[in-house]
Length: 243
Ligand SMILES: C[S@@+](CC[C@H](N)C(=O)[O-])C[C@H]1O[C@@H](n2cnc3c(N)ncnc32)[C@H](O)[C@@H]1O
Image (tube, rainbow, N blue to C red; front, top):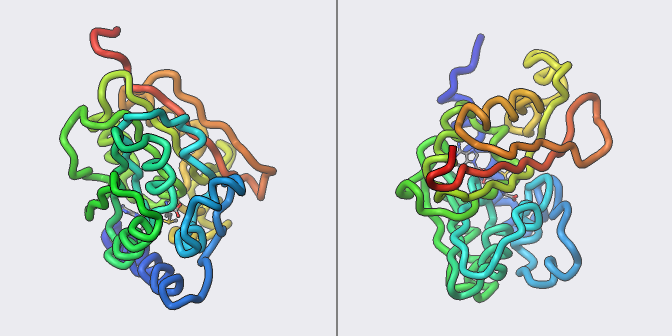
């Protein structure tokens, strides 16, 4: 029996709601436990935010955030990257977190309060239809979430819509080698576990270029695990008047 896109999204929501509950109940981290953060960054975070980390990298480092910028984190989970972004952009900047799972939003709000950051806003919604106006964001970040989407083209188009001209993306994600077919990716792991839905490197580059991005790069960051990698994804929206 095939699983529909709506059923897959429900499975993703249920899985991450359970992860949020596990952290809230003190059962520790669900998956990768704050991969890629420096000890200094971890020291800036409430314990629950680090424990709730389910990412596969550190997109705040990838994006090289600057004072005063508006940052949007797609699939913000327990809020780790929103909190770090809020600290990087300072009081003149803003960090938005977008997530579809109520339990994650509640956990993120609590973590942001405990971290003492005021310049954060958590939004409920899906990354395929971002609830923000066009050209309102300087930087889109995301940590291990694009692979979970059942409509990657919509996500990439939405990133291009909400970014200001000249804006950029800095994403950590799970990415497959081009040699792996979708079926071979699914043999290596499930959708909710961030494997079956992974784009290949070539698909990611082509998708970002089709959405209008330039300067696209998708670089593997770890040793190969049967053709599946953690990766850093970077791209820019062309500047106004450009091209
Ligand atoms: C693997 S966790 C990563 C969380 C966070 N980025 C981190 O690094 O800890 C995936 C998160 O994305 C959210 N998510 C997955 N698919 C989504 C979608 N289509 N729209 C909005 N949120 C989504 C889940 O609710 C969950 O909080």
